[in-house]
Image (cartoon, rainbow, N blue to C red; front, side, top):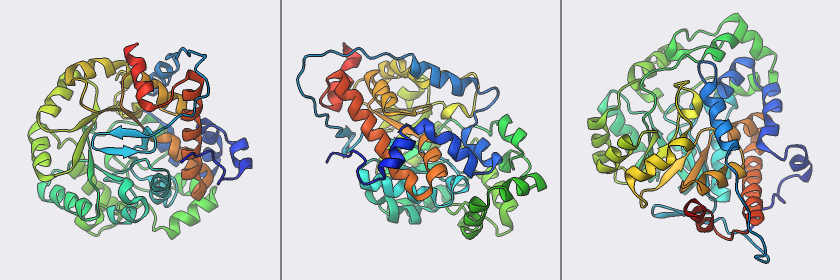
Length: 392
């Protein structure tokens, strides 16, 4: 089915034709400390900026005289087939950025046929997003220190129909997130989790966000709440910090593999040896990622590591790239560089923060139109044609 955005307002598409056009309106609708959480990297944002610079440096040379091209975006990833070569990456506390963001993006994913990955530390729960995303729902696991808690999270996910697990490897400890500090953001497990007068004032300056957040129950961690003592936001952020930071190692990965009978992707891998070892433990695919530049400011761009990871795991292991992808052109770039799929995090969230309930579908429509347009400009009919560019 072709998707050219006709179901959305043409005025909206003309006003915000790119995901990057949604950054400024997003910043105007949400408090400064929330925007800092969404937009920042860590350190001096070097890794985040390098992600963007590396993507911008990828050029694609068209070949013409191929007649009319009507691109087909159907994409096979492992045993599944999707209607797009991209998915929505997990973002913790999406509902703090905009209340209900998880279900907004989940509904768009279900409608347009791409996966939405729910974070362990999302605002909405496994059960809530199963209703909105349906079979397009994936679950991202921050491996908790408590193995029984891990197994119960997996039990809940499996019971709700999730068949793909994304395990995040690249958060061995909290990063400093200096822009968040400067903006006055509560740092949760990184330190102070109290809402200061400054944060309250920033929230009051965004009354629609504040009211919706209040009606949504505030900053919630609904997946983790059943396991934490009921002593308020400070208590659950401390519980999450104690449980989720630095627990994952190779032995634990093997335990998770034994506990989950569906697909597993290991997210945050940048080194070929790590990728090969994960595959040896039964991981089905690798997400090559530097966490959007949010953890280590000296980390290399994922796309710079892709060829080494591919060499380590071979041609048959699915490789997904995320971090910095902000357009359909970027999606085609990573596929042409040798990836099988891509994931987009901030781009979807800028759209939802700017447009609320319309944001998920608007972001999806932009990306689908852009991928199709770039493929047509290159004279490429299928996603496999795009992938073959890496061999030419």
